[in-house]
Image 1 (cartoon, rainbow, N blue to C red):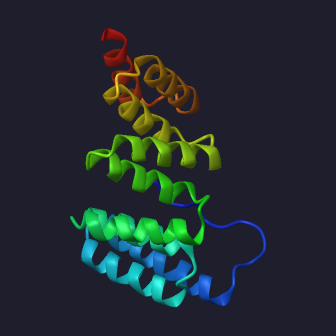
Image 2 (image 1 turned 90 degrees about the horizontal axis):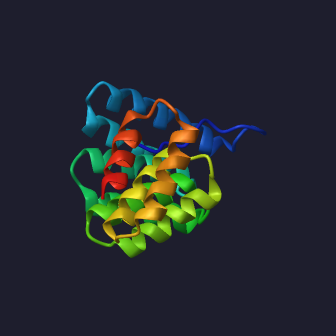
Length: 167
């Protein structure tokens, strides 16, 4: 899933440092299969730093893993309200919009993610699926070509690319 990398540059505000610590704890719990515990840490991170988009994105990812897509959507939307350029919020929300039957909205969000982070192969792959579903095979193939240039060992993208070419 699209998680935000560790922040660089000047040290974050104390609230964000607390949130980052809680997010790291949540990531460890999620990695160990303790999704509910992870969601609790992510909720605590949101409470510690409600204006920190990264906390909302991680909560959304946890909620999605817990089988609560509607709650995840709200978290991603909250992250985008804080930071409209957050590529991880746009990507994850775009992915959910696509799987929930809103390809036009998904395309807009995925392009928004790619505008903020052009080197985002996962977003290129999901965008290709959206474009393929809309019958735009040339653009779907181009998105997959970009994804494969960014991550040459992505055999899933190669598989999807072959499928698009065979249509």
